[in-house]
Amino acid sequence: MNKILQKKKLSADVYEMVVEAPLIAKARKAGQFVIVQIDTDWGERIPLTIADADPAAGTMTMVFQAVGASTHKLAEKNVGEHVENILGPLGTPTHIEKVGTVVCVGGGIGVAPLHPIAQAMKAAGNKVIIIMGARTKDLVIFEDRMRKIADELVIVTDDGSYGRKALVTEPLKEYCSADPKPELAVAIGPPIMMKFCAEATRPFGVHTVVSLNTIMIDGTGMCGGCRVTVGGETKFVCVDGPEFDGHKVDFDNMMTRLRAYKTQEDENHHECHIGLGLPPHQPPAAPAAAPGAKK
Ligand code: FAD
Ligand code: FES
Ligand code: MG
Image (cartoon, rainbow, N blue to C red; front, side, top):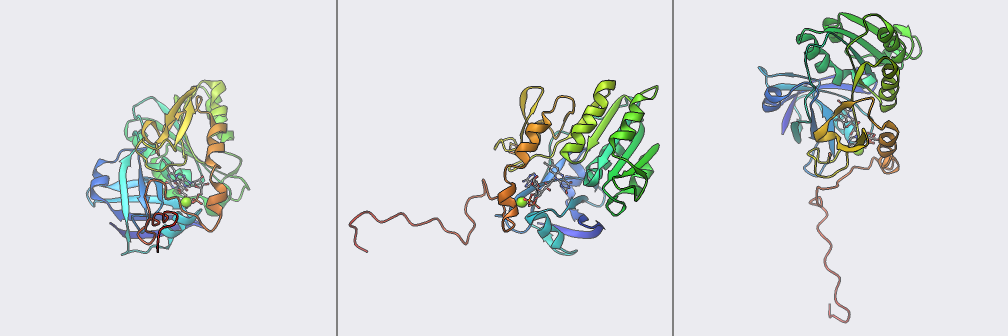
C-alpha cells in the first residue's frame, strides 16, 4: 500500500500524484516505469512512468491522463488515501551520456515521461533543446519544469492557442537541418507522433529514441502482451524497452495491437484481469454433477 501525499490537476484530464514509495525513489533511473494496481489485488495492472522522484523524502511522482476505467479510478483517489500496489522500478533505464546536442520532443502527456530523461541528459553535460506539443493551450503541462532544464524551449499547439501553431515535427525538422545538427533526438508521445518524429529525423541521420506505450500485463517479460517488432525482431517493451531506436520500430503493427482490446475497454469501463486469478467474490464454479447423480 502506498500513501498518496499530493494530488494536483494539471489540465482537463491530467493529474500529478506524489506517493510514498521509498525503495522505488532510491532505485529508479530515468526512463523507468511502475505497474500500478489501484484499489485491490484483483485490480487491472496499468503501467505509468516515474515522472520524478525524491529519494530523501522517499516519494515518487506519477503524471497520468484519465482515459479509461483504471486511470479514472486513480484520479478519484485523494490525498491521505492509498494505492493498493506499486511494482517497480521496471524497464531498462535510458542510456545517458554526453553526446553534444539532444532534442527532446514531448507530445501531450508524453512530456511527463520525457522530464526525467531531459533532466538526466542535461546533468550529463548535453545541450538540451526541448520541443513540447499539445492540441491546445490548456493541455500544455510541465512548462515551468522543462524551462528550468532547457537551453532552448519551443512550444507548439495544433490550434495556435499558445506558442507556435505547428506540429512538433516542424521545429524538429528545422533543428535537424541546422548546422551543426543534433546528435540525438528523444521523442515521447502518442504512437502516431513518435512515428512521424522518426520519419522527420530519418533523412538527416539523427539517431532517434522513442519510448513505446504498448499494452502491458505483468511488466516482467512473461506474458508477451507488450511485444513489438523492432528491426524485424520481436521485442518485449517491458524488459527490452520501453525505449527503442525509432527508425527500426514497426509503428503500424504496434498501433494495430494497441487497438486490439478497444471494444472491451470502451464497454462498461472493462478491466483486464488476465493473470490475476478469480476475484474473491467469484469462487470457482462447482464441478457439474455427473449424469444420473442424486442431488
Ligand atoms: P482503458 O480504457 O483500459 O485503455 C485506454 C487505452 O490505454 C487503451 O486503448 C490502450 O491504448 C491503453 N491501455 C489500456 N490498458 C493498458 C495496459 N495494461 N498497458 C498499457 N496500455 C494500456 N499513461 C499516462 O497517462 N502516464 C504515463 O506516465 C504513462 N506511462 C506509460 C508507460 C509505459 C511503459 C506504458 C506501456 C504505458 C504508459 N501509459 C502512461 C499509458 C497507460 O498505461 C494507459 O493510459 C492506461 O493503462 C489506460 O488504462 P485505463 O484502464 O484507464 O484505460
Ligand atoms: Fe508481459 Fe511485457 S508486459 S511480457
Ligand atoms: Mg483499462
